[in-house]
Image (tube, rainbow, N blue to C red; front, side, top):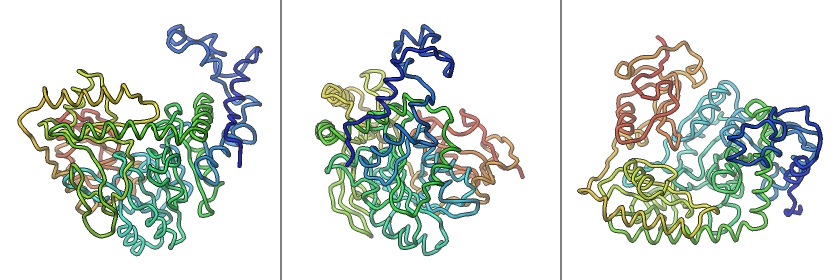
Length: 505
């Protein structure tokens, strides 16, 4: 057992920031002496004294032998991993590295169609061929959940030469699929299970939270420590266990996708966040769960509002019980819910999620994590306070009383069609299409053409079109609908979404 009280990287950074010497190395502001006064007024000088480079005492991220290595070892023990790598380019670079380390050009990888855009970037960089699985789709909630064990089993039977399986756990809505069953099936083929656990870094620290990916049998997990714990934005971790993945390949892949000038502010924040959770994680998560449950209980009692809950035990092969907003809760794609993630359905008020989001933000100073057609989703974390919860509940109480219109049920059959029919045809691999000669056409002329860019409503950054896919009218209609209702489209060259880049014929 390591001493989790220690913060070796943070301590070394603090000591070097306080050392008086003449600096003739990067960064150019030299301990904040040359920083813009505007930045100094906003942040103070102290943070810039700690904005240092790879000095001898601070180790090297790509060949750690000192304090970074010690900090990563402490993190591995705290999060239940065999080995941990610190990430300064967010979980994005971790997902990319995971694919690069397990798949080469032409290799198959099985993954959900509702993966984050970082996984598509990993396909483009590696040249891997995606075998997409449709996630379980809940037409009542209008939410895509997880892929199921049965779908993974079927895919591996059809593609026994696949090099890896990648899944998302939890989803942006906090929904967890049956990861232990998926791991068991994947390992029967002796290939690794990679998990985008960006929103599940807190799972290891409280028994009331879903099982962490590694504990469920995953070989690799990528976690955004900044999303739900106390690290700075962009600070993430990649964990592995077992021997199905070559650690050297992970290290080499990370050298391709991480900055050679990593921010020590981000690295130190990972060290501090790990120590905080290792020492106080259960207490902090107990408090966070209490706040979340208070919000869930009170908001669910407001007329015409409902919250995402799981009420039934899981089983394979059918619909489970319903929650206050109905659906597939308790099914193979929804076996657990992160109770610190709060999704509120507002369509009963005659509002779209985008309209409700704007009202809450501008009128009540309450800002959601993201909005969708029917819902608003909120992240309740260790940084929230009882006052935050009171403000959230009061804002919804007022919204329901003063902003309700004639009941409008927002239906989205196009999204349902996207996730309940066969996945789009890939005429090219994502890499081939991305690097192919392309042209930009008016949207109306792109039907049945091959997409050459990533197109997704954001957040949560799940691509609706990707390089190599055939563009169809239903998907174009859906994206336009999202845009018309207040969402926005990202990833593509034309942010107004009047044109698309396609492979030139």
